[in-house]
Length: 256
Image (cartoon, rainbow, N blue to C red; front, side):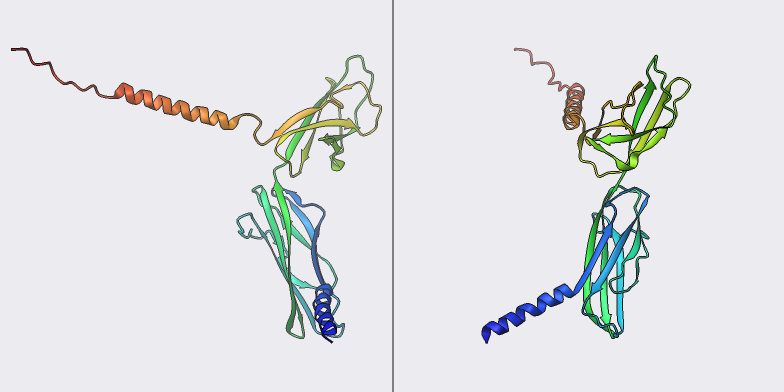
């Protein structure tokens, strides 16, 4: 009898936990500053009777790393949901880069009584775009016409799928291709290059050549600051010594 009772106690919470489900989904968790992205939210509860008076409400907000709510950052920020039917929310990224959190609270009521409450969080990185630029040039003696040639940017050995672009060579046989890379990038050195979308293209200088860029501190910035501070201290000390008044103790008394 005791074993049966224990099994019943264990099974009830498990069934309640499995009955409801809520989630936030997005195509990306990285947004450019002052740009927007869509996210889908959903709430599902298998225990809700189809003939009951069901109300599913949500409230959404975007907060920064200090927990401060960003004004008018989520649209629509509140409303109702149908059971097991997703809804799209648009998040407008703030002008300041940083880590933000999309929080959605769900409340489910049946016949006016609250039966479930759930909260979901989604971390969003708001970043400044990194502009990658490569200068291309038709090699001397080449008879290739690269106008309309398609290229992809590669960063750290990976092709950026949405970086496809075409270019037109000027009368001087040169061209510039650029791409604004939106990514949550780690500090340090990164390498990029431009590769023709179709292989076998020759006679264009710059294709396939690797370039470097840095995120964060590239050199000994901290040591430079320390040296400058020490130099300022030395200068202040020298000025103090130079301007220090000389004490005059008068002439020594003459011997009698």
